[in-house]
Amino acid sequence: MRGVMALMALASMCWAQAPAGRLFPNQADPEAGRKLWSANCAICHGEQGKGGRGSDLTTGTYRHGGTDDDLHRAITKGIPGTEMPGFPLSALESMQLLAYVRALGRSALPEPVGGDASRGRVLFASNGCAGCHRVGAEGGHRGPDLSDVGARLAPAALLASIVRPDESVSPQNYYVRLVWKDGRTVSGRRMNEDSYSVQIVDEQDRLIGVMKDELKSYELVKKSAMPSFEGKLTQPQLADLVAYLASLKGAR
Image (cartoon, rainbow, N blue to C red; front, side):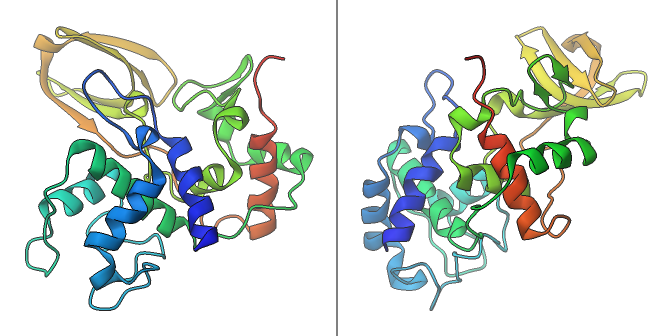
């Protein structure tokens, strides 16, 4: 339980600031999430989340989708065709419980310790990370700026973002698929949006602005455009990459 409690604190660090009127798990009390779990979920999934009548939730792999929206929907609406019911929780309570479920799922990840930041920097370059992410004045704009990521996320959260990038995608990092009325299609990371227009950075790292009335369709994709590196990097390589990212603290 001590390890899970530590992970709960880490889980709450990787959530974006909420838009006005919306709650996110970074506002949640992890201890409250544990209490909600014990009262509502442990009877089927076990006190430690390892399953029983319900599925094992400590693996970080979920049969009905693993995005934040997928899990939130399962918690609050239930899963049709299964014994999983929805729970009448408040917005804050649902975020508290979701943060705890994320912590359980991360308990299966290897501890990212003993890495070498200099080797991690080489891996960052050789795996094309700079094509999407900026560090200081260098890199692309298709992914989030990582210049101060080590000051914002704990090592466990950094590891999760590398191997499970769909887990916690901040609203400012959603990407969109735009289809013009003439059939042209483009996808990219949403940078700005208002009632009449949207601006994205496309796959060639170009800034594109379009008026919404020019579009046939506009799809907001709440998953990460980043591929998972699970199975592509060894555990020591992952530790090295985490060490490099953890060293990025921004301007000093």
